[in-house]
Amino acid sequence: MRIAISGSHSLGKSTVVNDWVASRAGYAREEEPYRALGLHGPYEIRFREASTRLHNGIQLYYNISRLHRYASSSDDVIFDRAPVDYLAYSQFTADCRTTDIDDAFVQSMVPAVRESLDHLDILAFVPCSEQWPVAMEEDGIRPVDHSYRDAVDAIFKQIYREGRFGVMPGQNAPLLIELWGSREQRLEQLASAIADTGPA
Image (cartoon, rainbow, N blue to C red; front, side, top):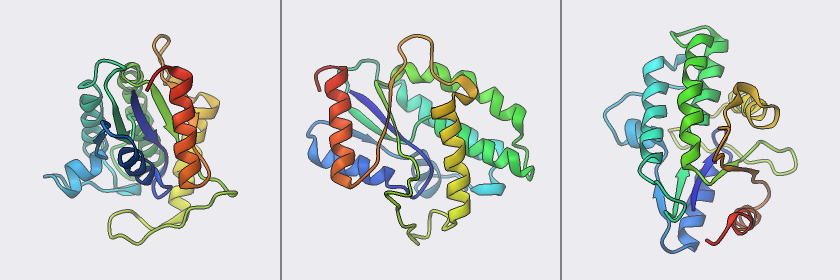
């Protein structure tokens, strides 16, 4: 089963991925592109109003290239981030009007994102929720800025709940679900989604 965990930063996505892999033998874990390319790789990747086409473009196409490594639903893998994430973050920067990222660039990413999603079986969105708030960690990597996180989350909600950009492919679209609650509840929701789509 090919799964991607998507959403704004500092909401527990990596925790879901790590907990899933720890509890499900045989699942591969695909690292977040920023960590693979920036933190542990050769690129200096910036966030917020400082992101550029290079920063977000290389993360998007790295993510897509990893998706294409898994051609079948029999491949058990979970991704920390999905191609949709780079639309949301790019739109935030486009709205800031501070770099070479603009609305036209965001729109140019849509076809590649849409075409890549047929390589996923489940796309799990982790939204901000007042009922289940997640504290932001000062880890030296992610920006500790609630307004930034909330603004990006609002764009994610437009994409997933309102159909902004029309990212879902017309055929072979992944099952879109939302994860919320405690760590245990999120794993239960993911397991339930897998049961609904077929054998794990």
